[in-house]
Image (cartoon, rainbow, N blue to C red):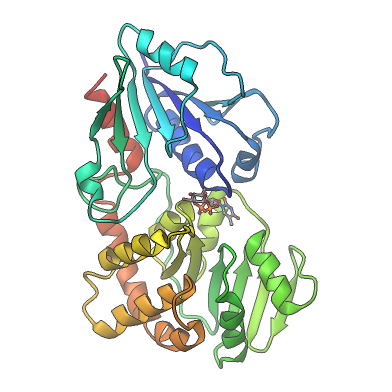
Length: 360
Ligand code: TRH
């Protein structure tokens, strides 16, 4: 009998909750033969990530995944063998009681947010007994290192093509509201090297439009000095992967695009999801410490740390660009070794399947 799985996803904001949960659901179903029921409170973001998903449907089957709208009043359903609570989204109380009534309680995982902080491997897989019910919830941490759950990566992910040297620097831009963006655009417009920037729809395009001081609709191309700006359409996840692989440098954000940029083995710049207490700088610099630890020369390390921190709001982006630009060839070489290193722990779906099999 195939393993059955309830995967719960609450769309907090943006696209990453849906993006991560959709990837995981598809892999469990298509690569591991699980019967997956994805409960999502707002299926609308899925429609852009995977065309063919109906944003308003209560129930639909797509790519071997049963997608269910997670209603306010949760129905009486028999819980599956495995229950995954994504990003501590809080399960419906009635469903938790139903879990406890199963003859064999489900394997219950909390899928945590991705972090490179050094404490993560020590917490991965730890059990947390329910205070009053015969249930145990396990913390399942994605990660970059051994001892974590690894990273989402599909078996069919194509090997990135080798980039041939080009006359222009091709960049993709996907970011949150970013105060450093106007200065970076100004530097690119004035620098000698032509830069072609594909601007993602949404927050990135709106910020570029404000900087241009004129409309910048999806599909348009505007030149400013030596920079060409292209308002790129929102495309499904596989095409977004292809966009990342086709560029020399990718600006990514959050969690899922951050990981995808690493699989395409190109230099990348990450805008961490901003947190009030500046906790995102801890995550940012914990990742950099890990990512750069095998990069021998101080010049490259300091150029990357300065530019990434400036992109996240600490430092002068214009002053940091020249040094960062000068180390891109070194980072391009590092990309392949880095992708090999972070694939060592195995992919997240495979590790999750193994973790559950040992407890089913
Ligand atoms: O959209 P995000 O900012 O999502 C964030 C993060 O997941 C963060 O961890 C979480 O706390 C917050 O949401 C609530 O960034 P992220 O994670 O990169 O997700 C974007 C998804 O959109 C990712 O799956 C890539 C996909 N995408 C496309 O499929 N096509 C596109 O054209 C673009 C620009 C993105």
